[in-house]
Structures are given as C-alpha cells and as structure tokens.
Length: 149
Image (cartoon, rainbow, N blue to C red; front, side):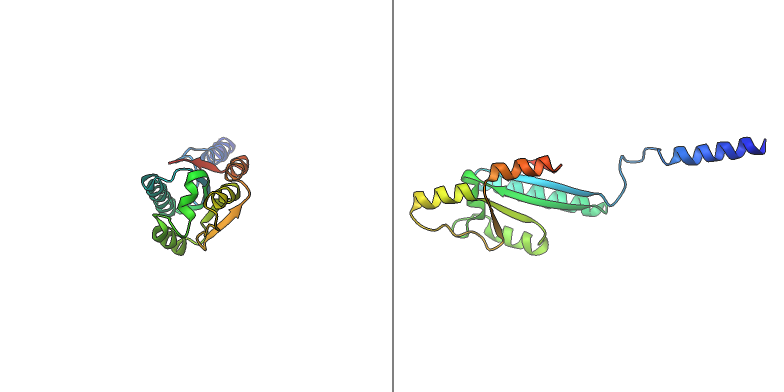
C-alpha cells in the first residue's frame, strides 16, 4: 500500500508539471516586427499606440518585448527628421525604451533622395537597413511576430 501511495504521489507531481495554467510561464521574451508603409499620420499613431499597449501589457505580466519598427515606401515619413508627424512621440518612446529598433529602408531613402534632389535626414535613433521588405521577411524567418497597423 505504501508503494502505491508513493507511486501516485510521483505521478501527481509529474502531471502537475504538465498541468495547463495560462498557456505559458512568466518571463517570456516576445519579439514583434511592426510594419509602417503608409505616410498617414493616423496609421503612424495607431502603430505607436499598439507598441505602447503591447509594451505595457507584457511588462505587466513580467514579460519582455523586443520591438523593431520597419518603415518603407511612403512609411519612411515616420522616420524622417524633417517631416515626421510623430517625431516627438518617437523621441519619447525611444528614450523610455532605447531597445526599440527603428529601421529605415535604404531603397526607399535612395529613391526619395533622388526624387527630391537632396539628402533626406533621418531621426538620430533610426538605423538604415538595405530593404524594409527584406528586413521584415528576415525577422519573420527568425520567429518574430508581425504587426501591421
């Protein structure tokens, strides 16, 4: 009988390790790629609202979130130092979360500079990537979640 109780106790302890809780443990690291390909200030603000909400949500449950915003096509306006309608929000977001990567499409930058006949200034926080679309594909292939507001 004693052996039976010990066996049941071991089985219960083993099964407890497989018992579903909320589907995951605390301390999960999330990685989210955010596409911005529109020059519409509403879309840009929605993207930034989404990022703030996800950062707050994950921090509230003890998780971390790595975020990379990838701007290309008309969305490059987001990261332009001269005309970004959300420049101040981006500065504030990056100051409070310096780990957030702001990636500007090099293909778009060259095309815009050629069209406008001048150098196009980017925000100091922005990093140039060869191609915005390729960067998004690379991140997704590395298991990043994808968000397009």
